[in-house]
Amino acid sequence: MKKKVFVSGCYDMLHSGHVAFFKEASRYGDLYVGIGSDKTIEELKNRKTVYSEKERLYMVKAIRYVTDAFINPGSGMLDFLDTLDIVKPDVFVVNSDGGSEVKRNLCKERGIEYVELRREPDAGLEARSTTSLRNGVKSRLPYRIDIAGTWIDQPYVSQYGDGWALTASIEPTVEFMERGGMSTSTRNAARKIWPYELPDYNEEMLARLLFCFENDPENKGHVSGAQDAIGICMSGLTRHHYDGKYWPDRIESCHDEGVLSWLESHIVLVPMFPRRPGCSVVEGKDVTPEKVKALAEAADRCWNAIIDKNLEAFACAFRDSFNAQVAMFPAMMQPGVAEWIDKIRDKALAWKMLGAGGGGHLALVLPDNAVLSDDMIPIKIRRRGF
Image 1: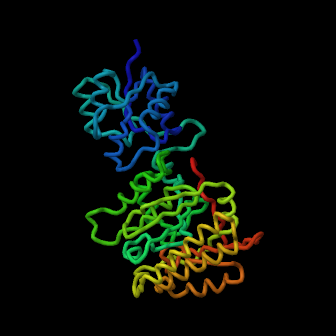
Image 2: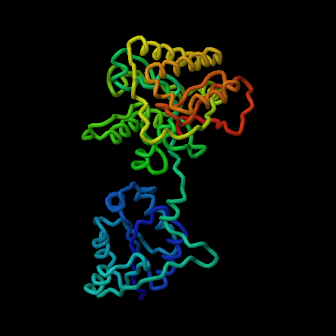
Image 3: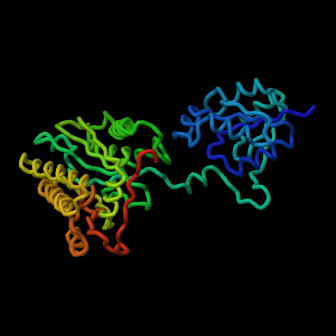
């Protein structure tokens, strides 16, 4: 009668190194695998799993070297204890980097043979580890670009007059610079919840979750505007209405393919320089009812022009929205920004800095059939369901 062999691990991001380990362990007998639960992995590694426990169980069971597999019901580093009682193995196999005196002594107490294997790739294959794969995988989380109405999501602005902010969720076609007006701080917060991509779930609820996660109620400092979380999580072109509160009272989205394609064909991004450390774009702010009204009216015209695909009206409203921002927050125009704008004046119909300004990226409105220069980055708006 063949011996029973037991191994235990997370087996998230299943790779050839795992399969080689199962193959080698199965030489000692019929192989049974204990798999860490989603809850245990999150507690131990402080992150969500890439694949759910059901998916990981399905994939491990499908490997021909595995006789059977189980989700470990326990918790912590010894979450497999109950599974040991089920399997009653003769041999416990670990990788050399997964061994410990605790496991060795546990096997000694239970009369189980303890075996440590060196981590070796199968013939002709590269050495693989989950850590190296994880470090090499780029996040598919979207970025946010703000199109008009920036700052209206702050209550100290919308208290002087209500209005809309316009955002678009864009695909990570390039790795955009940090502190560049692309809402990278909120995106980095999102990566702590969803490391690689947004879950398939109600988009507004995802935005609410991200907003609450980033803005700890115990934090007495700055509250990130809701437009960042909404712009990242809500696909297509979205406008959100603010009236003296942190969260909008209305949200509307456009998913019309003709409109989104038209917008993509007329907006490009140009990287300048990251917002400098210590830069305060709110220093010297001058928020008045008249200036907030100008910001809100420009955002209204911008939305209508995009929906109508009216390029001239869009460029005018886009430019007016940026001018309204700078009128309230002149420190957005940090040293060096004006020189960058001078470089692109003859290439674009309108321009604005993304986010709070101070540096980062310029968004340009281009004429029909414009030829892109090397420093221009086209955008790809994220469609619903992707």
